[in-house]
Image (cartoon, rainbow, N blue to C red; front, side, top):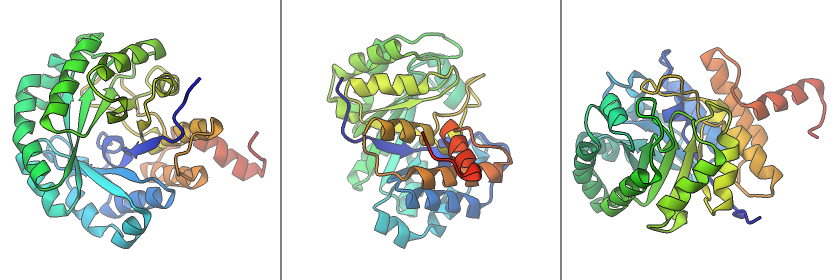
Length: 311
């Protein structure tokens, strides 16, 4: 068995994790979450998005969040912040905020694309193209997200070839990395491997990331299967925050704490302090008024209360 020596975690809780929450959190809470994540050793953090406030009210204060972050802490920790953008207008907001990384998003399902962003897949790519071109000209890195890669709530199973074709389009546009998102959490390890193999035929596997939701409890197994193929970038959300308003039944992202616990146990480096990460998860869970969705975090909290040691 061959596994990567190091895995880069892309923490998506401040954006993908919180965007579906109905309770609008204060700017200070979002700032505190990002700073706790940075202190735990997380180096890639999706801080927010510049999409329509009507479609994602939780993200309306992204510019304020970015302005209030402790830049000394972020600089000292070598943290890269990214934001999601839907078009040129969103990119202009991102440029004004000073971030050096942006992301664009497309769906592998025509129906989901229409439900999510009110346009076809081809139309979404046409919207992104001028924004990506301008971002690259300004020295900004662009990441591409593809949703519904292992299933769509409206169309069912998605053919790997469809995902591979869209990944080629985003790469040709200038995206330095493609994140493959199992939006409804329907994937299983063998299907996840087949997807990676199909997409990786067109380019280096180190330009691919995986983004699993845990609806059917398969996320960690899927991640492990992809690691065996050489994937070394994993998206995750502290406390398992997340969900999608346009994917009925979809639960949260895989919990970052659970991913780090698994990787620690296999000797794979992440640079993240699990105990500090769990504190960040407990913090945001408390602000949302519920317990953490991370099993590892709950176990760590129980050990802390009883004074017992990890097995």
